Image 1 (cartoon, rainbow, N blue to C red):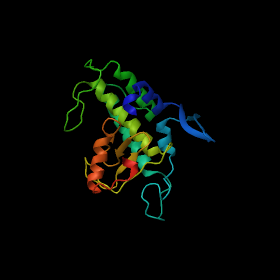
Image 2 (cartoon, one colour):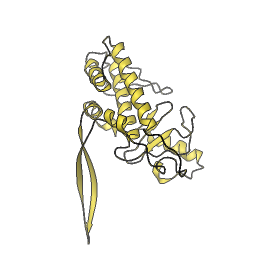
Image 3 (tube, rainbow, N blue to C red):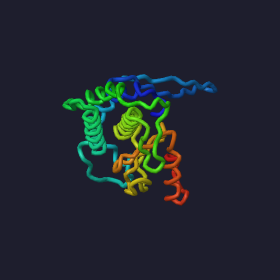
Image 4 (cartoon, one colour):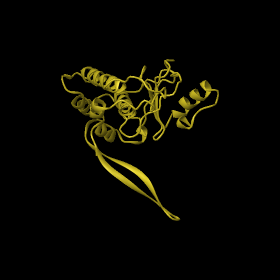
Amino acid sequence: MSEFLSIHTVVNQLTTWYTHREPYTHDTGTTTWTTTHITQVPPLITQLTTAHPASKGDLTGTGPCSRPAANIDALDTYTHIDLAAARWVRELGEDDGLDTIACIRKLYALAASAHFCGRPKAVTDPKTRKVTCCTVHDIERDIRKWWTQARIVSGWDVAAWAPNNTCPICTERRTLRIRSDDQTAMCTKCRTTWDQTNIGLLAEHVRQENGDQITEEAS
């Protein structure tokens, strides 16, 4: 989904209250119609600091166990975004002494005067997936990654699925978090993200590890 939202919308959802629309279907006899439930939700960055742990069956399915009072994945993601945004602001020659939301907004404003290649899409290294064309696309790629990570681990919409598989990038096991509703995923270890443009590569990796016995969540 993140590749199809404007960068302005992505930044707004990270840093301001926004409208969430959830479609649902009604059935009455032979008639079916779809309507939308509309709610106002806090910024994704705020959601990370208030996220609750998933229920014991949401992620591991391992039965009763002790759980932390906070969502560790969410707090780790918040810290990662905070440090990354501050680092970008410093690289662009400005003071990073701001809270995370203000830092992301400042980064977005500074990107307007950064080096831009003029291309509609970023040029990336096929092996490392790093942006090689310009600073603007590099910043945008990072901001979109933060948006994907925040949506997945905050659990505001749907709790992410954590399969017993390895990450194809860093090879760590049980670090994948997958949201089937909008076809996004991330690794909580190396912070790699996937979206609708490349989620099929991750699904194929999981299929191969599972001997093609993949569950519907990742298909």
